[in-house]
Length: 184
Image (tube, rainbow, N blue to C red; front, side, top):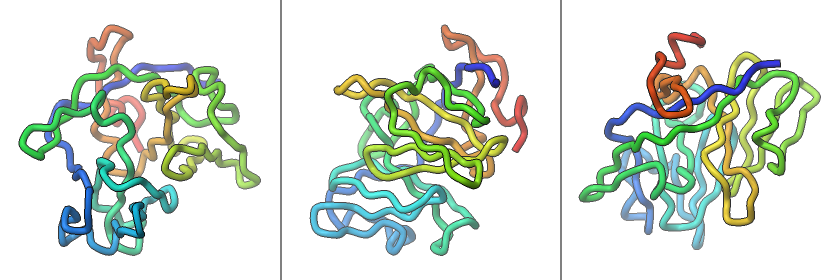
């Protein structure tokens, strides 16, 4: 069984946008982010996600989607990002993580997780479902929701965002990049 590690994102400008209306969707993301009533529908590598209007949406180029973009809801953006004049920057927040393997980690107890027939795992998030395969993804716990359940998702090693994580100790002291320690 893999061990729990600690990670944080590098501090940098975050490719993200707050979408309150269709006018907030950048032209290059139209078709990847769509407005359906009071909700957003997102194309992402791990599956289609939905979110309420006003959500902060992260994005990156991806060859694994039909639109060429991977998008996702950034849960608890006020804890993870600083917003300055509509531009988002990452904060140093120490997170628990563990490589996806044959069991899910104890720190995700209480999350809605299922083990699939193909060996992958799926976690239900507030905005949809994410699926990861052993050796190809990490479980990441971002915090605790108001109901006490884990705020978590799956980080896929093949995506550009994987390069944004630093392995650290519990106090946030850097050890090395996650991609150097565990190459995709």
